Image 1 (cartoon, rainbow, N blue to C red):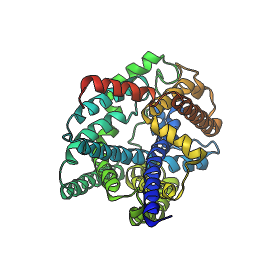
Image 2: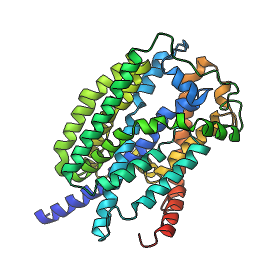
Image 3: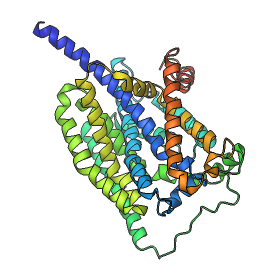
Length: 394
């Protein structure tokens, strides 16, 4: 084979590997977020009980297993999903430039549709929805991507500084909080998660909308930084052969430094320290995961069975994100099968593991069967059709 032919083959392999890596990473992020959220569904008091139990020990004999499992997922895949949204923005901007279109152009319409998707998901499916927050972040970052690289770096530094400051203020508040001063809220009466109808839970989300949206507001600076970092890494070649140095650095920081610290603090510290691993060390671990997957698919010529299933979930990411939460709600909440309230505390951990595996199997099966007949997931298809109606020339 001639040198030019080898180069062409290498370029094709790199493009193929890059596309595989992107879809696989989205699939990992979607199924990984379920690894955190599933504990919310299997708590009889839903999100309220889950938050209270972060700083409490149930004394069931499964405490350490639960701590390890929760910490392995806590914040890493949320961070990865956030970075992937930033990469998606960079891809859309590049596509607009190649097509001679202005940027951000009609992107605000896309952001508005994502807000609508998130609102529906928040009201009907999960009060911990991230889509509305991503829509607002994406709208801001879309305009920031139209600025110079130097300006974008300044925005990353500024957003990170704000985020670190907020974490520091929270740490100070927790440190000076009077002992026993924190109220617990697990005694819900009535409990809409276990005893309420579907509509009761919708009304409960509306009544507590501000409290349930606090996290989206708090992580906004971090999300802006991670969106911009994702866009920068994509353009710097993290998915191409020439990005080997970048990938090595991300793996060293993510797995050599952040992961051990994250695991140690989260598992053995527990309680309020989970806030600092979820929003502090976890995003660096997420970047390490991104680098590992990118490196793996640059070296591997075929996607493989596991990669194919993950890429299918990634290609239907929006549909799978909503559907996995809907299925978990049907299985666990009172308006569905109501299993969460029927399981004793001593069996909560194995029950949660079982629910996670069941939902993953259903989601993976859905993505595989759907894509055998259709090019896009159902929510993606509806989203695209709506966008074309609103922006026919976009």
